[in-house]
Amino acid sequence: MSESPAPSAPSAQATRRAAYFDVDGTLARSNIVGPLLFFRKKLMPPLVRELWLATIPARGLYWLALDKLSRDASNRSIYAQYAGLDAARVRALAAELHEAFWRPRLLPQGLKRVAELRAQDVALVFVTGSIDFLVEPLAKELGAELIAPSLEEKGGRFTGRLTGPPLAGTHKADALQQHARRMGVDLSASHAFGDAIGDLPMLKCVGYPVAVNPGRRLGAVARKRGWPVETWTV
View 1 (cartoon, rainbow, N blue to C red):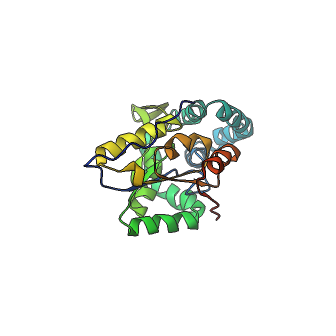
View 2 (tube, rainbow, N blue to C red):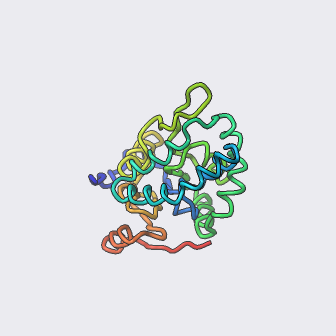
View 3 (cartoon, rainbow, N blue to C red):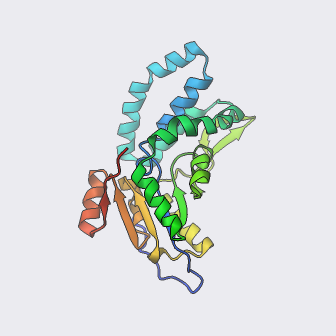
């Protein structure tokens, strides 16, 4: 994995501060498979649903193994499972997903940090690999901007393909830096929060990175660099 550039010196226009949050595994005890299961259970005919659910243990092992090789590839494989689902029906369930899936998994320490930064007039930005419309209710509730991938639609149904690259690794860092340039954010005075090694390029972009519930690899990097390592629990 190529390294992202270090935080650049702020321009005269770069006066805003921002806090960039990963969502899955950082703000919430969640992953991108959870919403897929939620929608499949809601929308598939009973017999087809049971047959599909029976394949999940094997799929889960495959996705875990694939994730160790490439987060991009594992994300694409998981989102391919949205193929054929009615886009309007899935979007209509986003509010229900927020209440049933996101809200019970949000971490109180993360919500506290969000509130503290918002009170300091720091712009809140969620940078997540989860699909945009799945996280929009959470972002709206917490007053955050949202940077997230989108699913392609054709004929009113999802194709299972993303409209752009999965938002992981260097793609996250690129999206963060583009946002900072567009919005006049001083990255050297900004924060980022992430839990996985795929968040490392994003964390390296800011002056105040925090490793939250980090995996072994990110934890080792954070300690070596002297970054704060925090444990947020349900």
